[in-house]
Image 1 (tube, rainbow, N blue to C red):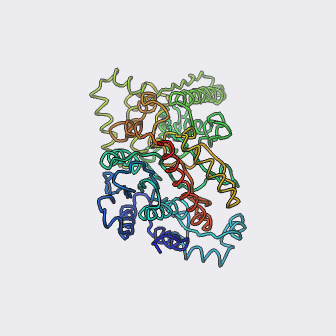
Image 2 (cartoon, one colour):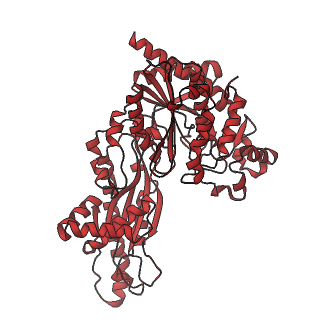
Image 3 (tube, rainbow, N blue to C red):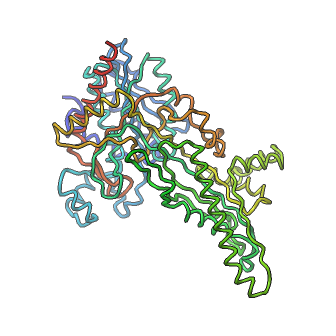
Length: 546
């Protein structure tokens, strides 16, 4: 018997990996790939070919892990199995934080006292076999399955090569996958590999609250993080009509964009979730009786097929509506005040700019040297280790340099950026989806619904490019950190054009304290489906070559 042949062995491996608290940017995330390396080194294949098991530095102490099993020295057809090993933090567990990574103990606790759980969770766990804990579904189960499949490949199970790829940092900036893409291209040159399919096993995501359908995905949703620097006019709180409050302006932007149906995107029967706010704050350093005349608000915005120019145009339309509302509202609210004193109140005019437009104005007006000094000082005087904070300070200081333009709202983008990807039109992927869905229905009574876009954001976004590189200029030109402090390997991504498929476990409540995994399907049935899918991929590739 092998190391991870049975459901019980895979559950034990899952328990061990979940016990490593690999929260993004923690020491445990730095250590995690070494734990996987240690386990894979138990396989005789890697004892014979240690050079096929590698750690690739991402530049900050973290590593990407690759483990290649070649069917033969001449074999080129290769299936990549990708997973991430970082998880989000466990503050949401409250008093149960100490058990968040002890899946055995946490599961036993909930089964012994179900009243600790919300009613909907309590009713669901009466059917099936569930295990609780941070990372059980998102996505250490996927890694466990891939390690088991890799062990099968070591035993010449497949008529082709299997390459396991495990990356850090998927939950924050995806520096792991951004590093992995050029590494994979170099590995293909070194080992004479031909990548034919990239298979991910992120868990199934519901499309709406209470959705219990099961899915197979041929791509992954895209995401941008648009921000709005709201620069009003300073004044004492005792003279509010002499200024314009930045917090008020930001609240108006949030009111316009939050859950805005018009900014959703539909493709066939799929609809992106609407924008929602992720950061909103005033930019005063200290308390004082001066109004907070500068504020910022940032949004999560999902994408399918929209070009970046379409995205910018839509956001500018929304921002101009906000500017007009602020002007109209200030005019109405000021009228009574002005009438009381028998004076005329000057109307407020709010201008709208993109970051690119503001930057060009600054260079023209103040010269490139002064602009460079301003942006350098923005990072020097603040603790800006976070890429969102770094971006905000750059826009804030540039807008302050050009304060004569205020009141203004400046549209910009902050990291991360996830391009949307969908390879449903690939003949190989189409045949695999047809076979796996039919097999799941016939043999397991399980209905798998095909979706074009995995809705939880994934590292599949960095496989290929749906739009030409040059069409991304409306994004890159309005991203202050690009390319010095944040960049995607766009040319590598364009050439790394591999069909993708996501078939993952059944779980619930990713990023919640009730995160859980359904064991029987996820560690048994799904393992069989993935194995069949890989067999079929190599069979189809062989048929195409005959």
